[in-house]
Length: 297
Image (cartoon, rainbow, N blue to C red):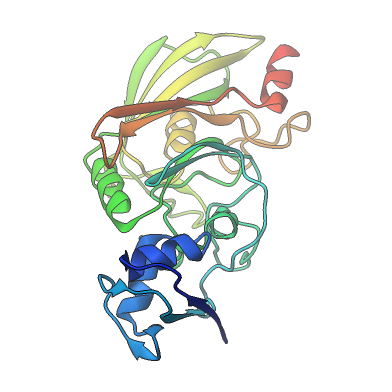
């Protein structure tokens, strides 16, 4: 299945890709260009190049395919957008939302929500994770950046790989974490005793997490964590490996009935803007349920 949009030009001089970007609300220029390259756009019934100049009275048709099997569908899901421009979308993700579809969960993810907000992001950086550069665990809240073009995705992915992202998390752990400031180094891989978990294992991938203790309320330690690498569950695994699991972490610690999620929030995010090269930084306040739990201690 697919849908076809038809337009008649009313002025001269427009490039075909620019004309469709302005007329097809929500579709990015890079996505329009992909449709043109795939032959899904015609001008007066014939294929045309993205750079073709249009004259008045030309009939333009664009066929937009439905998502392929396995691709996330666009859904209207409310997102807390912190910032956006033509290159990036910065989102403050709520706890409970999965980043992208996985077996058993095809709807209600951040990927579905992003496509609902900007359909043109489909295909950027891959079909399953439209524009998504990095991920947060389902019950981790906080800041994520999404690329709105192939060029932005390439830039951000390169920065992430080169460890040039600044990522700062707020975490509450059991016990009195000591020393007050340290770096945890331990290779992380699949736990051989439980394939649903990660663990510090000899044949794992190198992983480094810096931390500093901010406060020690009522038998807990409030921590600022700075992951240098980006392994799955890294902060959770590293803190648990030194005997101080996150509060509410049912996978690496124990449930907390008064919280209902693990206490981990992506508080600050910084990187180089893909177009300007300037360093940009965003911050997110600790969510209400985390602050409320902390204030009760």
